[in-house]
Image (tube, rainbow, N blue to C red):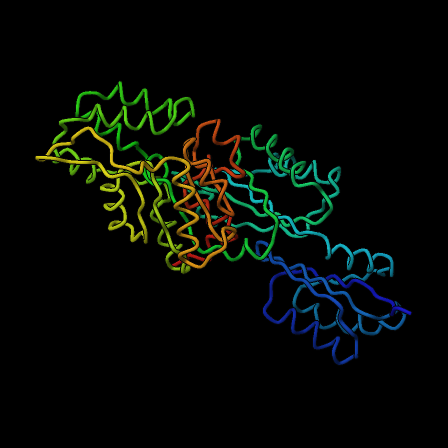
Length: 402
């Protein structure tokens, strides 16, 4: 027969001796513990313990606890826990754990209400909730960022949960990522970036075209290609042909002024501190990828060569062209070279030619992407900078505090 159990709850101001005081008294009284949890919010502690004892047997223990905790300003309460409730809890631990990460510039009560309202109907409950963004980041006057992570349990279909979260995301201008909390989520090792409009805020070929006096023509082709309306290889050859005669000095000018995307430098620095490998896999040009490799310490660069002759662009294209299929191929080859499963790989991009790479990676993220790409990618970051990826990996701002 199962031993009777009860839930002991302790509330009060945060105090370094609170937990040790409670556990010392329970040990002295021979009370067996089955579970314990503690959380702190704004200096207030919530300590919950499941113990084995009848209410009658626990009464003197509770009196001893009350006497010891009164000087600490803490209050306690106890409630019986039925065998059925305990068994339900133990069974629930066998259910898949789902992590929902919410990113936004600001998060308030209306957003929390909308995010949690669909959960009961989906058979989900919030097991834990934690803030990943620091108060300073959330209150910043420029580029604030806010992030919370929900740990959910239940038997919901992830597609249904994603659909419900997408509706809330669209209504409140949020990013919501839904991930199964498995071993791969905590063991990613390689991050591959698209370059143009992802790692940097511009399309290099458009910058070159402006210096060649064909800016409007090239930009129009670029936009069509990124929306998936043109075959990438065809559009790439057409755009490069328009650059014929551009002097090499123009490439140096563009390279010196490449604008990094919001959060790019912080993200890459953090990834390297954590031991991740990083790569640029781009349909752009190797010359500019190498500049970023030196600037950020990127480990690998795979992009297109821009043939030159007599100090000017020839307007021809070197093969193979790094298009969508080639990007996915390079990603798989690099993962194999590093001895990684694809589930350990993250890919980030914004254009239609990134979709094969995003699909091949264990975590594919559309970054400030075109509608077509956002709709097809499994995850998206549109509201924050690239360093929002750290939140999706479960890291908090506190993890990188100086």
